[in-house]
Image (tube, rainbow, N blue to C red):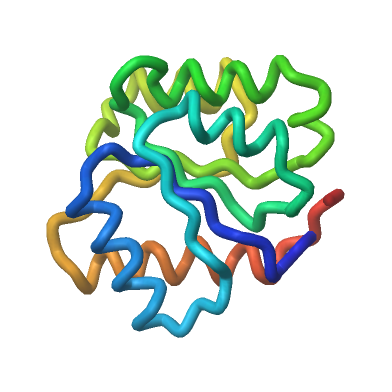
Amino acid sequence: MPKSGPIILIDDDPDDKDLIKDVLQELNVSNTLITFDNCLAALEYLKTTEEKAFLVLCDVNLPGQNGIQFKMEIDANPQLREKSIPFVFYSTSGDSDLVRKAYIDMTVQGFFEKENDYMEVKNTIKTIIEYWKKCKHPA
């Protein structure tokens, strides 16, 4: 697994993007953070980059193509599936039907609900990063 690849964040909320950026800096995460406001731009990046991403953090509720549709498109694309990029939903929407759909209808590796407390956000992001730094992975 490419431990040094970029973290891809897809979120249309500038405050949430800034929060994640601040948390990653505070945690001394050395991975570059690449942000996208929408799934179409992120999908184009993933299809064309030679760089091996470390992790995708994606909101569910996004303008245009939502996070669920985005992940289903990744799963349907043999080139992107072969990259085996860990994909985690990090969203304000955490209802049980949505979580169930994410795990049953597609290959997500995590679904986390955004917290309102900075320390909770920091702990969640730290847990996600530490897990994927240690996890064995085909990529």
